[in-house]
Length: 248
Image 1 (cartoon, rainbow, N blue to C red):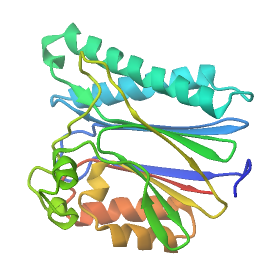
Image 2: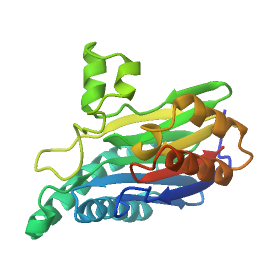
Image 3: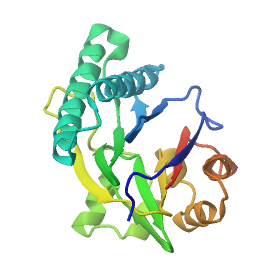
Image 4: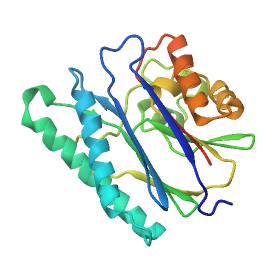
């Protein structure tokens, strides 16, 4: 069980080999008693996805930097991140109305707040947080995608979903006029856990068993992050790739 242990993070982002720009945005913050990891994958074209993801990440980072404090409880943190994600959706939507070229832009958003040995997750979209604990590789988020809905309904098997041509269709993202509700979850961390935050440019192209093996065998978070980005590019680099690794 983890009390207030140290976590070493490393991140690597890459445009990939086919995209004209990198629409992923991320930030890692650390304080005296907490860590925050924020990851967003924008969409919209003409660099509007890049704008949407950067707006969301910056807004969430600014708000959490102001409002997270040493005495905050898990329950208060859940309430805080729920409200911050709702407002981040409004920020992105209002920006999309400012200029015709911004119309239709949006972004996924996945946030992990590590506080007092717990990780509070807020999740919208298809970035992922996974956890390597000893020999088990666990998904802590569920993709908001069309193929995941089809798997949940029993129309597709998980194996079929991996290669489905519409696997990149997202069913929930920031930038809409509707009320935005993030998936919220809380997990207790243990010493020795290894955290993997990834955009779909990694997990849609590199098999899970290979991701697990790299994270398991790497001596540092930096080594793992760099190797995983290289592997995604080795498959053709069809999307932007962002990987953030944390060793507890």
